[in-house]
Image (cartoon, rainbow, N blue to C red):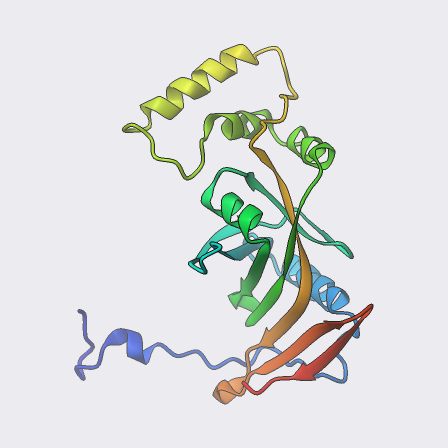
Length: 221
């Protein structure tokens, strides 16, 4: 392992003193969706790379966790929407254990948002509408990929299937929806907004659903 001149592991010396902003419980939004919208719009204005990239954590019915990055495609009062192959690992875990967590990390703004909640499968009509709004190459890609399943070798199998589908759908711009592809919605039960602060005394505001309303508290860093 690489070491610096003092013999200490380089990774142990990685430090960042966060001073970009603050987050106060008195001035944070009453509704966490409004607080999310405020921060998301600031991330857009700040040109954070792919601000809709989020870590999605799922678990098997036996409790084995897994996590990966997916892209947020819609958010509103009903929840946070993304799309995937239902036969992928995440798809199967969400169908069999419909609970999930999301994490948005915007290091440029020294911010993080955590969201936990239950999962709903979108209707076929909603999934079709989004699917056919995608570029044709992405529609074909969804048909090609048997996501998360082993292939028989190198990329040639995928490329051959892609070429076959391009020929099959050469006169079609909007492909039919694959049976194994569509959307999920995360319906939040709680949110946590984290703002980095100096001396590791970070701001953490936690919202929890209370019937039709939301309660919020400050958490110790």
